[in-house]
Image (cartoon, rainbow, N blue to C red):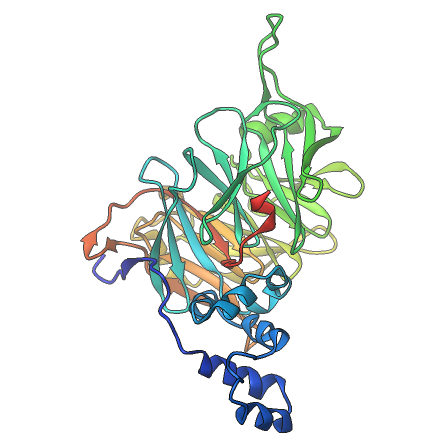
Amino acid sequence: MLNQKPIKVLSPPIIVQPQSLALCAIYIILPWSKCLWYLISKAMWSNLPFDPLANIFSYLSPDSLARAKSACKSWYACANTSGSWATLPRRMNHPPWFIALPTRNHGHFIYAHNPADDSWHLLPLDFIPNPVRPIASIGGLILLREATTTSLQLAICNPFTRQFRQLPKLNVTRTNPAVGIIELNSANFEVYVAGGMSEASSIGGGSSYEPSLEVYNSVHDHWKTIRSMPMEFAVRLTVWTPNESVYCNGVLYWITSARAYTVMGFDIVNKNWRESSVPMADRLEFAALVQRNGKLSLVGGTSEAGEACIWELTENNNWRMNERVPEELGARLLGGKGRWGSINTRCVCIAGAMCLYRDLGSGMVVWRECAKKGEWEWHWIEGCGTIKGMKLQNFPIKGLLLHPYLASSSFLNE
């Protein structure tokens, strides 16, 4: 705990002078002859063309963009335009933030780690009317479920712009279904809900497993029941499957949470279900699916000396081990416990990064792609242990990885 960095409450960004960033825009975007013309123009700072400025903004990290937005009204308007979403992939070269949400009643806050300066920040969720539980990240947004009801009611928020919106109610009221996410493009996503327990019948029947699959499309803004599913899959998705899903090569995957582990997948195009085995399924003490370099991968820890490995699913549907978690990082995460089964190991992934974590106060093992080198590198991130110099209570969390989106979302304004 002595090495843990203090947490910071996000405050309004510092006002910066526009000259430095604008000058960068000139040198990068414009030929030298046009740069000279701009340099001798008295109105260059207030009349910088919108397109070059938006282009430069697309390369800024979220915290740098927040400061740039505060420079003047025109920069604020430029950063908040709908076109900013289209340039978001360029900012993906920056490492994603780790977002931690309490899984129990430990305040209405989000704890966010900024990898740019290795600092923790506190984001209040007082703009959300009811207690919520996190499910997954969607771009810079977070998919939530309301915690005040046992039936699934989904919502979406952006903790950085303090926007919140409930999704429409499902066609079939369900308890504890599996939830999956597919990001179709930067402005469109789908949410899949499979299995779960249906409500008790009004004529006296009890609740039962729901063998159907519903999908929500963000453009059409409604749920659609697409087909039924085998009852045995409905049972396992309800009882043994957490909400973590991975979409890879046209298939939406979940992994069962009970040993021996298995992988269940739904083919989006052919609308059929499949089941796959897991390497060392009966010996893994934790297992999670990730997507890496366009391929489905599995992270798992065995009981042998705290070893954790990463397997990749080949084109022949065989698992091939291609990486091991560095022994020293695995030992730090275990914290002297010796076995993965003795701690609540969790895993979260996003394009270009994967994170193993335990709780808020413990550190995290991160494996992420280095844009400059084109290789994946291992890192250790200290947990969040203090706030304003005061010791912070440690508690279970649900972790997410995302790239903060600072522009106002039209989807959340509907």
